[in-house]
Length: 422
Image 1 (tube, rainbow, N blue to C red):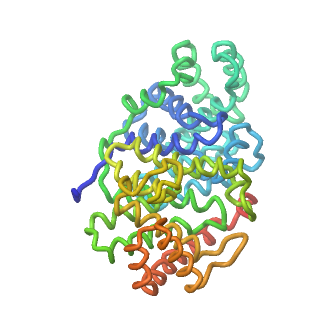
Image 2: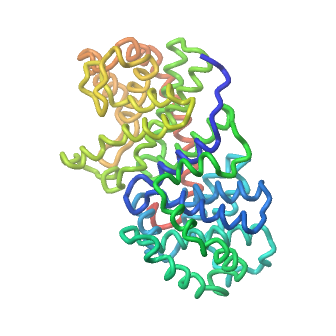
Image 3: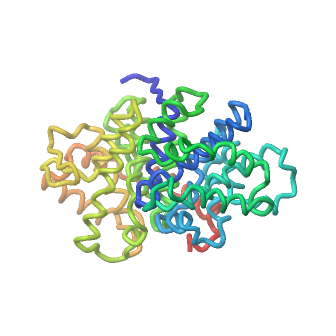
């Protein structure tokens, strides 16, 4: 396996943006459309390539701090009175990625009304945030069950009426300059918008290397886990146990690092699952379980759209498959399952059994061993990997606990505000 893995930055950011919006028909392409509007306004304003890229990325991920599906829908429908919490969370989540620092500042301020700014519109942060604020507002005003050219004139009038209060007149003028063409509106709602942004978007960095991929995987690990305080450390635990199991199995250093990334992303498909199902304290109904089974399908679909990450997609998405074909959603059999996928199965179950859940405390070693042995004996897990876990139980358990404690401390320190996390 090659040590140097690179992916296209635009492909990565757009895939993750798409993942955040796939959970409900009212959300589909919300952030992509917002980014398109920002891009058009930024070009009309003559922004530098660097500023254009920063605001474009901010727009593609501007609702990253809205952790639950319910919160995303409420924001899209303008039903949230206090919009600050998700802006603060968005900035915090971006904090560990140096090249996203400027984008994080714009995300932090993207709901700031012009009338509340004390700085001049000439201040780059103020100006860029105003563009994103207007673009976000515009997209939320679009009625998805109406033809766009039957409503665009009313949207223009609504936005113009907010000049001097929500928006600075310069932002309004730029909006007028780009919105007087039917082409703009038709491009905005085009089903091919993803491809257009990928091929033409203002990404200056074409490729990013493994270290940046790892940082992005940690960012989305936190988005996935922090949706609920009950799962705030799950993906951290899976990533830690998968990397340790890979190490004792004898995988290469590169494969161990890739397994950690796969562990970080293994539940990214849960972005499409309502919190009412994820947080349910009791057994899921047949209908709820049918929805839950889609999360690994989405995990594969999201990661596999990023060129160069097919192996990670399989390792991450196959954690509910079983060698006898009884798993879901692909019903893979033993010949379809690589060592990495088999390790991820054990890592996911081990982590789930040892951590606290709404309906039970984490199990003791004896309880974990009993369940894993039964699954292994029934050929539902790879016996070699289960035995390696037993042989190295204390070391693996301690390492996982250390990583989960760090994740929990970060969650409790940074996300102790806002009603959505109570």
